[in-house]
Amino acid sequence: MGTQTIKKIPLVDLKVQYESIRTEIDEAIRGVIDKTAFVGGPEVTTFEEEFASFCEAGYGVGASSGTTALHLALIAAGVSTGDEVVTVSHTFIATSEMIIRCGARVVFCDIDPATGNMSPEDLRKRITPRTKAIIPVHLYGAPAEMDEILAIGRKHGIAVIEDAAQAHGARYRGRRIGGLSDLACFSFYPGKNLGAYGDGGIVTCRSKETHDSLQALANHGRLTKYTHNVEGYNYRLDGIQAAILRVKLRHLDAWNVARRRVASWYDERLAGMPGVETYRYPSHIEPVYHLYVIRVDGDRDRVLAGLHDRGIGAGVHYPVPLHLQLAYARLGIKKGALPHTERAAASCLSLPIFAELGEDRVERVVGALREVLKA
Ligand SMILES: Cc1ncc(COP(=O)(O)O)c(C=O)c1O
Figure 1 (cartoon, protein in one colour):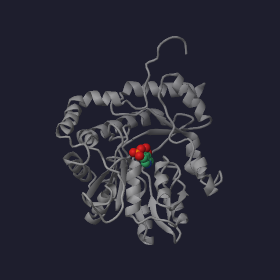
Figure 2 (cartoon, protein in one colour):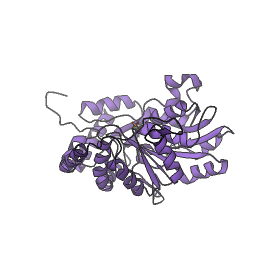
Figure 3 (cartoon, protein in one colour):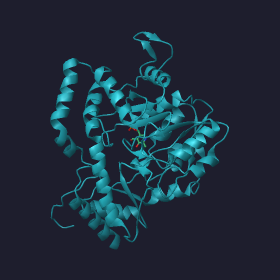
Figure 4 (tube, helix red, strand yellow):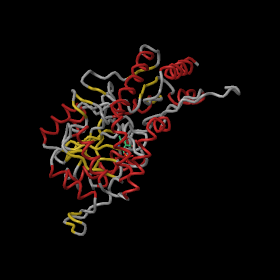
């Protein structure tokens, strides 16, 4: 590409976000240090309440990550040895890892190619008398088809646990993700729409009883400091992370609006571009574009390399579906078993998206993509 320095466009820019809220964040961190409320404490409790209210959910229980939030939710749903849990294969491995940690068997189902999310039709075929829970993932920030999934759960008496790690603030039929089912799990990994400055997560739930048992489980099964009716885990959310998340929660809706605007700029420019497919969601699904993902015909990895050469920080989420990972070879699922998932994995390409990304840079990304596809 010659010697000219190319101004890179990253996939996500956490630094520019920090610059816009530096004073608030620095004060919040100092406040926790001043009070030495590092584990538990008022910031955690208040954040749990604020986030639950943001999600229009009853309660929230902070966790040390999205992964541990999933573990807590699976235990709360009663998942244990011999059970089956159905989830998608087109996701990050954390979705399935904790199913295994509970001693249950993971059953992968295919996606709807139009949205990239769990196919209710395929889900129906995977239900057996041993199915204890279903985990739909709101992939890339777009809610899964919850009415149908919840109806399947209700019909069979199966718990639905949402993996909302990528969907803070998204809406389904006008309602926020997190309050739609009995249990929903969020990740606050730094790059998420609501990201901590380290690891963090939360489970939102409907009932006080579930809240109390999740809270005890996340904190060594504690009733009081040294009374334990059950064994639990050290899965707590830190005070500093909660204080940071409280600041960022106040900006989340505005950031999500900005992400949707960026997505609309991509939508306009990519419509009809030969060799490119975009996800178009029906109007009852309001995504928050954790990622902006397209599907490209032909050699996706060549397109990815071409974008990198042009300074565009594109990514792939996710290149190898879980059912074809070595980690799940023991399940003996063959290539071709989940055709829509496999096609999505082979063709998906994530373009830069974050609230501060301007239209001029979207134009540059699209220009670079056009160039690579023509080459
Ligand atoms: C879909 C999905 N589920 C679960 C997780 C796990 O979250 P964490 O990294 O906070 O453990 C992530 C995040 O990376 C994710 O994207």
